Amino acid sequence: DAKTTQPPSMDCAEGRAANLPCNHSTISGNEYVYWYRQIHSQGPQYIIHGLKNNETNEMASLIITEDRKSSTLILPHATLRDTAVYYCIVRVASNTGKLIFGQGTTLQVKP
Amino acid sequence: NAGVTQTPKFQVLKTGQSMTLQCAQDMNHEYMSWYRQDPGMGLRLIHYSVGAGITDQGEVPNGYNVSRSTTEDFPLRLLSAAPSQTSVYFCASSRQEWNEQFFGPGTRLTVL
Image 1 (cartoon, helix red, strand yellow):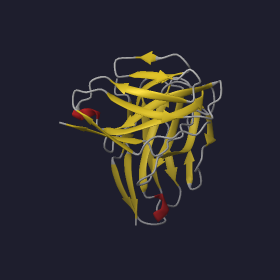
Image 2 (cartoon, rainbow over the protein chains, first blue to last red):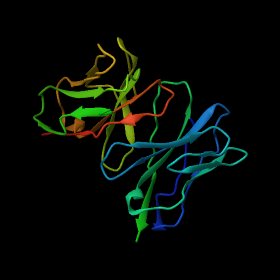
Image 3 (cartoon, each protein chain N blue to C red):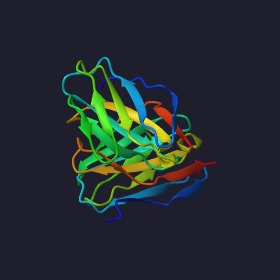
């Protein structure tokens, strides 16, 4: 699975959009980009995933560049409850199911 | 649905003791897995199962055993606890190994 690079921390004002970048320059054609988050000490929570098209669900949007070397997770209206560590993970769709969690980005949403 | 449940929430063991961490899911998921998370680190895969009767090793399997006799349950056994196994343990499940995974609330284990 390809390696990902994320900034260690980011701040966002409550009510504003939070844009979390992820670099995955060595991604292969059959690898998906997944985003999970971990709030405080809870279990990680799935957010969204995509292959090459932009994706949107009730939680967030995922924008993947055309060359697929980077992506951005967008939380459109961040709230204090979105304060968490966000993990960008690249994996092949049919492997062991293993998720490789890096250090992630700690997003602090401020009032 | 209760989702993924884990028991106990907290546990303190002495070195050499054995115990079983319980994990159950009520979503009829085929895939289940165990991770450990150490301070300041990401999660690391211990063992996983793609269905009842099938288990395999992950990244850090030493010192742990698993079995999968039913679809719902995936217990993790510590054979002889060591201080290096002090960690937070998370169980996860998904419909298949390539689907999004649902995580339990975790078990915080301290080995003295």
